[in-house]
Image (cartoon, rainbow, N blue to C red; front, side):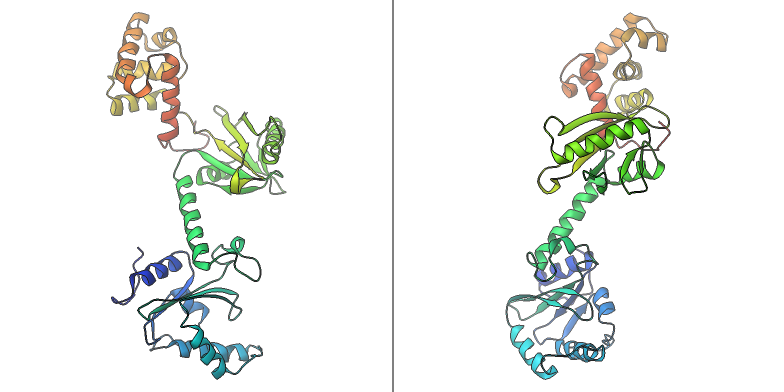
Length: 355
């Protein structure tokens, strides 16, 4: 859990909620059983900058100061500050309460009273922390805490996608990107096969490929029969083309297309190093297997390595036998598929234009 400057006797449940709020940039305030402020997040101090947090504060102090500045800003109170405070203190006895505040900024607020008498208030600006899609203009679609947890889960899932070498993007039928992971962002930043046009739409750098890409994305996003999933090549400035899978988004991604760009393949030298270092093949077996996995025939591999066909076949047999438990067979096709899987999980640096 995120380390916060909370008193040692803070109930663990409140500490966890405060850590969640702080982690995503929301405001959090923790009060003890006497309603004395025991913790205020940096964001809360910024939002309520008119409060003096240098000395002891109570909930009453913060509310009355806030009301004073609200009036100074031109607001008209529907009840006196004293009546507002009395009514609020009664409501604070409720275990859980959610409400909307419009001063000092638009805030979705959660109050939770712990059975110990301690309480926490989380105050979130929907736009500031990326929660606008969870609420309408007036009423939460569901509880603020649940929204914060969902926001956290989404961030974690995005981090997972940023950690893999596959370039992934979610694109609307009009061609605008709704989400892209780090690998896809890298392709765009270097113009490596893909660009964003003046209208903010995803395009292939090659004009002909761009026409096919636009049609494929629209077809998949709209779920047209027979076009919900396609595979195509997208040419690059140099090197082998990208292999691109475009499929229909499902569930929360309905109405969009999911694009997955296969990682740049391991070259024969890199693959040979992996086979030798991590799978126990000899150097000779690794070299032969890497060339065959990259698409050469055993005869072509023999010419490349300046060895006889019989020597290469013997080395292939020994190498594939060593890999048998991993690739489940002894054919060249299985070896090629195994090499493709290695390319997907090896985390090869995507230095655009170098491969």
